[in-house]
Image (cartoon, rainbow, N blue to C red; front, top):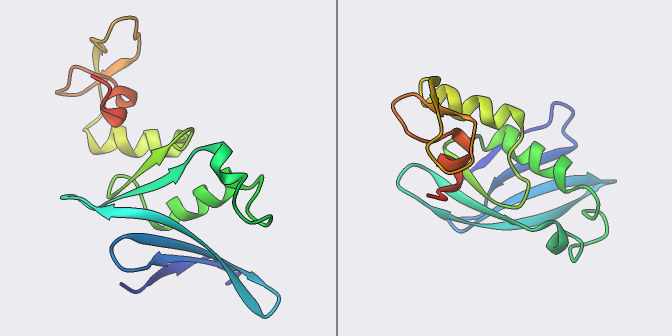
Length: 136
């Protein structure tokens, strides 16, 4: 697969390494430094495994402490819902909005899962958080 678009200033880029990994590269002087994340094809796109916050602290020093920033950059190119992200704390407000829009909006009903007071997606019985995480 070819590389996807990068930042407007050319300081970083995102793309695929075959069907089982994606990369995030960032310019460091005249060279590029690379972070690869595992992924796998699905019927509707790809699942990208971003891991936990703790796992990111085992990555190279240039990545440490920058997980949210780097994941947001990756997601700006490899967009939800075609790309699903698996890991802790990986969905943000803009992702929720995209998922709600894809479902046709919210219904007037509450999510049916015990204790959840969020509004269910249209034509669904659960909220966006539970449909995304497939917890039911």
